[in-house]
Length: 268
Image (cartoon, rainbow, N blue to C red; front, side):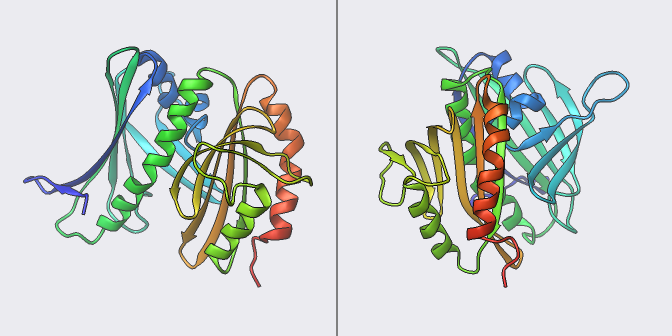
């Protein structure tokens, strides 16, 4: 069990990653809407009358979002938030984002989630969040290594399935990475979908991170997501460069139509 417990009763988990870039560059990657959306989820930082962010809102999929109140804002070293939406019907959870300067133009980014409760009732929620960070951290590393500071546009589609493993097999075959190992090239067979590049990371049997060249330069994160009584299939492209928004505008209807045909959001 990875959760830690302090004598004060605080229960917490911490993820961290070394990323290339200066403190200021990493700060922009975590504290701005364009920066955080370029590697994590579509994000917003609503501002107060003084121009400082008051909340962080993250959108994880259609109808799936989480809002947190900013409790500390310390540029360029980090910020903290607290949310009562982190655990449905549960206690508030605090999240601390911290940046430490490293060697050779790199930084250590840490994200720590904590809550104060007397039992382990909610540990699985916090540990589940911790388990998801390595994939996002890897996307951040790719972004900071190859696409730092470039405009980003997101292409996000989601489907549903009755059998996650079977749906994943069908998706991997259709996109051309079913029999491809980490570090090897892949490409979708001729057809409606344009996607090719290199298999970067395989975090799980039903999850993959692709460093893509088509439909334009970027990263694709695909995974099966069991949520409540559903099995969702998520495809998210982070596309970079001056033409990213134009590419998303062109490709989004194609992917959306294909997903709805293969993995309709309402399973019969």
